[in-house]
Image (cartoon, rainbow, N blue to C red; front, side, top):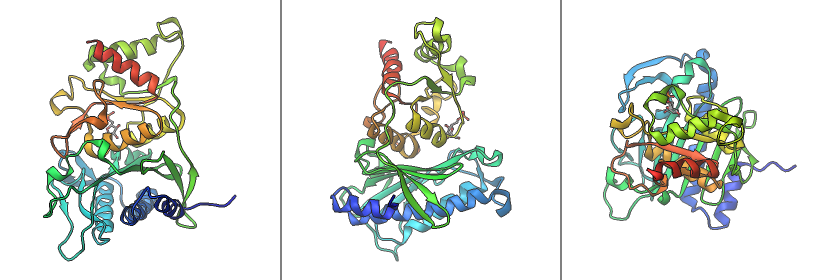
Length: 333
Ligand code: P6P
C-alpha cells in the first residue's frame, strides 16, 4: 500500500483550500520539533534528561529537565519560519514574541510542550499538545489579549503522544487524522484517517482519589457507573487513569470513553486542574471533530471566552452519550 507522509497529507489539504501555505509550514515545523522531542524522551536516562530541572514554571510546578528541553525545542523551531506572530507556552508566563530579526506571520501557536511530565521518570506515556489561532488584525506585537479567543476560533489543533510508538494526531477542521513516526525514515506516516469517538462506551477515566471533593452531579454519575449491572445503568463499566491527559485522551479518541477532570473543592479556587488555552481547547476541537463532545459540565469548552492565558477549567470529554448524560446531571442543578 502506498505510504502517505504528513507532508503529502498537508499538501493535499492545501490543494483542497483547507490550509494556507503558512499554516502548512507551521504544522510541518511543529511536527519536526515533535520528532526532536520524541528522540529526547525515548533516550531517557541514556541522555541524562530525566529528573527535576531545579526550576519552577509559571504554574508554580517543579519543572522536569524534559519540560525545559521540549519547551526550548518548540520555541527555537518556530521562531525563524516567518509563519507566526507570537507563541504561548505552559512553561512561560508571558507571550513569547518573535525575535525582531525574524519575519512575522499571521498565526499564534500555543502549546503544552510536555504534558504529563510527572510520568517521565516512571516511563509512562507523555505528550505535546498544540493549538493554532489566527493573530487578530491590528498591527503591533501580539499581546495576551490577542490569544484570548474562544476555542471555536482554532484553525488547527493536535498532539503528539510519546508511547510505544510516537503518533501525531491532528485536525485542521476536516476530521481527525493520525500519523505514526517511522524512526528509520524520520517521517510521520498517515496511519489513522478520520478517527471517530464511538458514541457509546463502557470506559471512564477520572482520578477517583478526589471523590470526596466532587460536586453532587459527578458523585451521582460515577456512582452509577460503579454500581454496574445491578445499578441504574444496567451494565458494567471499566476505569482507566494514566494521569497523562494526552495518553488518556488518545485512548478515548481511539476506542471511546469519557475523560473527566471536573471542578471539585480541591481545585475550585484555581478554576479547575487543566488549562483552557493549550490543553482543553485543542483536545476539545479534536474530540468534537471526531464526533464526540467536550464540556466543563455546564457549557461547551469551545464556547468559553478566555479571561487569561493560563486559565484553568473543568474538563469532561469523549463519547457523546456519556458526556451529554453527565452534563445533563449538572444542568439539572
Ligand atoms: P492528577 C498532568 O500533570 C496533568 O496536567 C494532565 O496531563 C493529567 O490528566 C492530570 O494533570 C493528572 O492530574 O491530579 O491525577 O495528577
